[in-house]
Image (cartoon, rainbow, N blue to C red; front, side, top):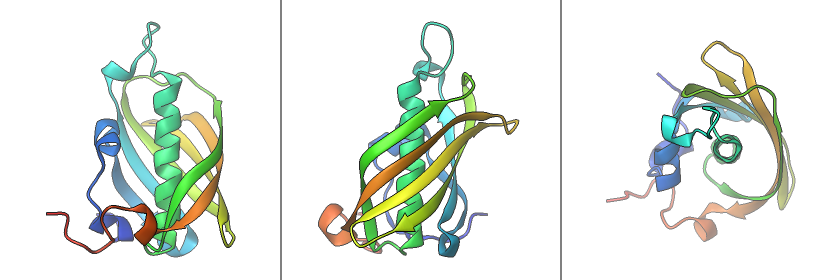
Length: 148
């Protein structure tokens, strides 16, 4: 069972639901998180591999939550810049994202992430510069507020 994080209080947005997003493990104090995704057949290009834009979305949806959990829900991220390196074609099936907060400043942060297949093969890696926004200004629902 994954460790409790500030993410537990937020409803999953439609984009996360589409990607099959779920927290698998986290060390919020260390700025590290592991997210599970489902690489669906509908995400594939004509060659039968998951299209790179979906992999980039998975990286992005791993890095932002790492910051959110690390700051106990105080900071939301808006991606300023993201670099992605595609290492191995991704086939449909389970995909694991791992992210690490590298540094947080007053208004900008830096985060690294990688995607792995079920066998531990690196599929892609990425890094991002993110704008740090107080969650109360960025989210429609405050952490801890009931979504219903």
